[in-house]
Image 1 (spheres, each protein chain N blue to C red):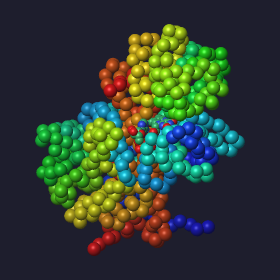
Image 2 (cartoon, chains in turn purple, blue):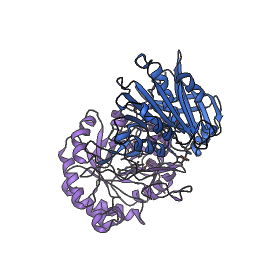
Image 3 (cartoon, each protein chain N blue to C red):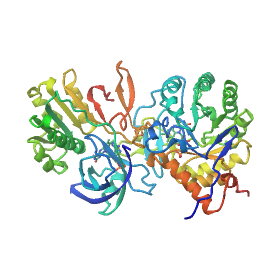
Length: 308
Length: 272
Ligand SMILES: Cc1cc2nc3c(=O)[nH]c(=O)nc-3n(C[C@H](O)[C@H](O)[C@H](O)COP(=O)(O)OP(=O)(O)OC[C@H]3O[C@@H](n4cnc5c(N)ncnc54)[C@H](O)[C@@H]3O)c2cc1C
Ligand SMILES: Cc1cc2nc3c(=O)[nH]c(=O)nc-3n(C[C@H](O)[C@H](O)[C@H](O)COP(=O)(O)O)c2cc1C
Ligand code: FES
């Protein structure tokens, strides 16, 4: 019988140690419960929960999603139960598992980000925060916090001041120079950077001669965005020294490995969960098999191996 | 485990009527017995185009010794259903399910009325079958109102006729049954039914359900309807399939068609 050699899959994201680099992407894995029937949550590197706001949010009117070539558009409108209900009703379920829980947060003002961060820092069972900076800044006419290095740095700085937890900043790709924003949030104290969030997009219904989404525009995710995500991860890893988490169109272990080879320390699985609820574990097993067949004993030996 | 993704093998997939197909899929024995109103997400493995699985109601179910089978009744409306229609016997498909909440059966309401429009017959046909097999309802009067655009779009009638004696067919153009909308046919008969011991089950296009809601507004009839919305995950995680409903205080909130439905009380739905 062939015995499998033990492979080290653990990676460090700054102060957070993950048992493996496979995480879930916010908004695609609910609060974890929805997938507990399908995967052993103990085996996932980290669960990033649906974006949390200070107050519950209803989200956008339907239709909220539309399939496009190799991807999907969504305009959920950040519907969520609010940070208090998350702490009271959802967190204890996740605490039953030996898995890192990362709370994705967003606000429409700095004050909201700070309040949400403080509440989560006091709760037991949250291991890190991920700041979604793609949210429109209400005081600045709705331009997203993440589209300007100054505001992105400011949010990071304020959340860092409000919490002792490690802070991951999740970048939006809808910007002209993502590396500049990455550098700005690193300087402001980000412990890690994750990217990319969805790409802004639209699709039009020819029968009705109007956009498919009630919200008119939405965010594109899925395999179609992977090349864009890879390039942005590459641009960012070259310019920052904090750990980078790759997100965007990862459907298979091969896709995940592409990000790791470019220098991402971990990956997040998003849309893939929708078409295969076992995606996280399938990808984890696939990465292990790849390492095994290439006689690599430590996942860290593949990370950032491409050097031009 | 109650729900999962299964690899099914198509044993039959044929056009039974213009643009409407009946697909039979053989599944492993571990597939759970579905309840009426539940659906599956169906997809061809390995393809990213189309990317997402499509929700289709379970039209019939049978369990054999070491396998089981579901039947899906679907009409070709776009890319995904077009591809499904092209699959031949022996092809494999991914079947995720059974998903969603089923119709609730109230034993106190012995008088049963079904209102189906177009493909809406699929979940209601399975419900009829279940009620016919339920001792509690074996003596119950059941009336089926079945509507479609035209005679060619009326499907599933032969199976239904074996289950239910009282079927009222309506077509928009009068090519089969009465001419007119199915909801009008029901409205004409409404005095025949006592609101307190009648249950109305409905499924069909949004406009049909909307007029049913209007007809039943203010009455004591209890009606459960199966709704449709675009879906991605099918299990309540993406929040893509939102439907506007009233919460217990009457305020607007969104529920998920896949996990909180697809069956809802007609009264709670807000029509926009
Ligand atoms: C719980 C549930 C049960 C369903 N059961 C059946 C069934 O038994 N038989 C059947 O024929 N159809 C059923 N549907 C509808 C079916 O899912 C859609 O017709 C199908 O997804 C269309 O896919 P497509 O790629 O062919 O069309 P697309 O190219 O995606 O769209 C073509 C047209 O179909 C409409 N459409 C797309 N998706 C949906 C959807 N999820 N709900 C409503 N309209 C949609 C679009 O608005 C568009 O006009 C059900 C839907 C739900 C939510
Ligand atoms: C339905 C849906 C909801 C999402 N919700 C959030 C969210 O609440 N917060 C967030 O930071 N990102 C959210 N995202 C973005 C994803 O986390 C991820 O960055 C993006 O989808 C790209 O990855 P993918 O191609 O693997 O899906 C959402 C994506 C989808 C598809
Ligand atoms: S389809 Fe994802 S929540 Fe309903």
